[in-house]
Length: 237
Image 1 (spheres, rainbow, N blue to C red):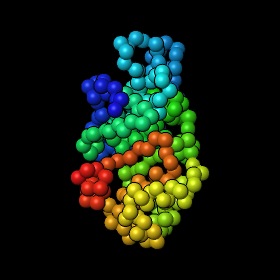
Image 2: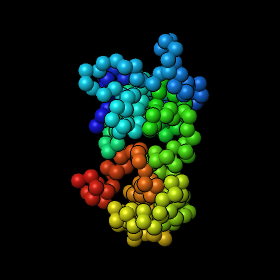
Image 3: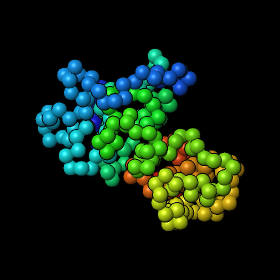
Image 4: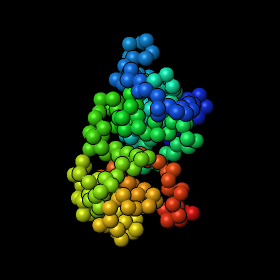
């Protein structure tokens, strides 16, 4: 895990209870513009000596996938995120831990291009504000949302196949790998998503995200802990 320690001390994820019901801000500076007054873009790479520790915004070894620097997100007047620094390198699993309302989903939604923000969020070195969320998916960033967002009246296999559409991957090959990971889905290929249990729907949502062969996968583990099959099989009990 390569999360800047400062994010856990000073960059506190603010408790935004009831924030989802507040009106959208819409005034976030999402273009990586100068926030320091020195005329330079806020890209987190000022050349400062970090004592051998890689800065959140730098990519000296070419492995940086996602970086947030001084990230701030609000719903109206309610601050959901304030001063967040985050770094995710290729091949890493980075976890966000916090209670309901702490801002985990807000951070994921912002990184996926769904929310306005201040500060900086970069995917593969490019500011997220310059991307359409669909284009991010096409370039390998997939978000398995908390609400699953399944097509209720489509079959399991149809839902999975749609996951490969934006990336243009080989659906048949990817289906085989997803069914190997989640055998329960292979037994329900023609079942409508709406008739599945919560845990089965969560498997389907994750499987659909994996169908796009993502380079960076965002998601929530909240519901994984509530399903015995997933917990015992993939989270080690």
